[in-house]
Length: 76
Length: 242
Image 1 (cartoon, each protein chain N blue to C red):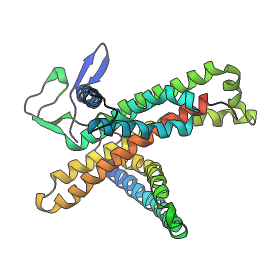
Image 2 (image 1 turned 45 degrees about the vertical axis):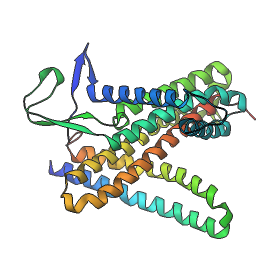
Image 3 (image 1 turned 60 degrees about the vertical axis):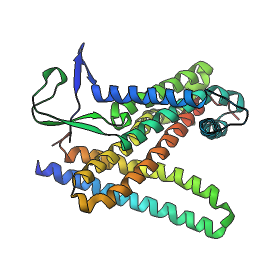
């Protein structure tokens, strides 16, 4: 039981870590793009939001399974 | 974690909460669309304006993936998918109904003293999203097969024959991630809302408000991404070779 809590915590923590790295890379490139070409802001914003949804997917899957393990629905 | 009432029928388990959620969402989509298109005018006003914006927005997706003749055929499907998932996602953020069971109810599978969830977003149940994603994938494969069986079968062994296992893993991973992406976003969002709502009321209202706003945003983005990916997976199979 204690190990399940530890496992859930680790899954959530690494999910957050990965999402942080992914979003950091994505938005740093987005800002670079705006700085280089300010008139492309509108197009870049839409595209980066779509990319945000795609990038967030895998960490949030890990977080969802982490929550399931944490509350003892699966595993444990 | 609260539990959901379940009915066992002919050896299958039916989740009552999911059935209620799906039904309410479907009826709501129908009402919204009918209300928007009841008094059509050449100069769109009010609801009709919003509906035309939604349809033109989805038209942008389908025209991006397919040529115009095929895009018109899939427009209805794409709009339906988008509206259903969008309304489902936002409903789960706005409305959540839970109750407490004092006695055990055997035919609903409820134990004594449990938090029972009666209404939540249907997309926060993995069975719903898996069903949608696999239905789309099966349709894409069948459409690709009947369009040209030779081309369809040949693409599994291209560019080399030993890549067959990689292609099979690819085709299995597509619907799995397609379903898990939508489910995990909505599920994690709802769990965090519940955790924040149960916390100290005077401390967690600010993060709760921020997270509710973000959940509305995530729901819209995920509905868009699900529709885009569905069209991508279908267009990969039926698009003409250039």
